Length: 168
Ligand SMILES: [Zn+2]
Ligand SMILES: [Zn+2]
Picture 1: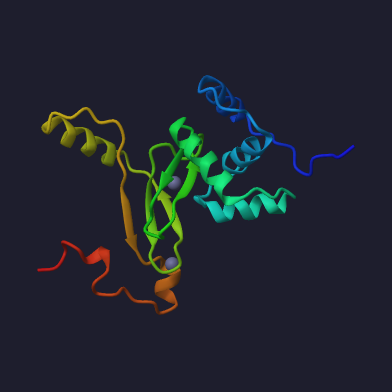
Picture 2: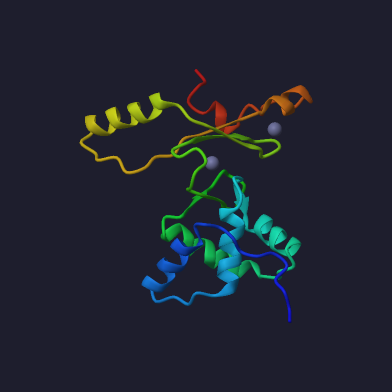
């Protein structure tokens, strides 16, 4: 009898399965395994990183399947997708770690750091109210150089996004 290399164990998996059933989509072991990788990580994973992690677990699941599964997870509200300007999306689950957090993105090494400030949601609500909006969600990403890249001598290019609006 073949034993599974890596048992899918995420406590959030049942939410995903329930969503699939509600939508009339097949609940497959491949989808389970893809979701398990994302639910089990606090990182911001690309499809390639998810594929690599699955491979480590002894599973060969194609990028197209991973991508489609991620789209369903995003639609289900269980995973957030981010475009940090890499030319591909990164995914993180919405459970437990730092709800409503913002991101600092290093434009050199592509490191992503999370932070959270209560003032930001306060300002968000104020601005929305001033414009008659009901806020649902927001995104804030700060692009620049992380301390390690600065220490290794990397400098910001002048026409980088980070300079937009700050020049004279
Ligand atoms: Zn960096
Ligand atoms: Zn994040």
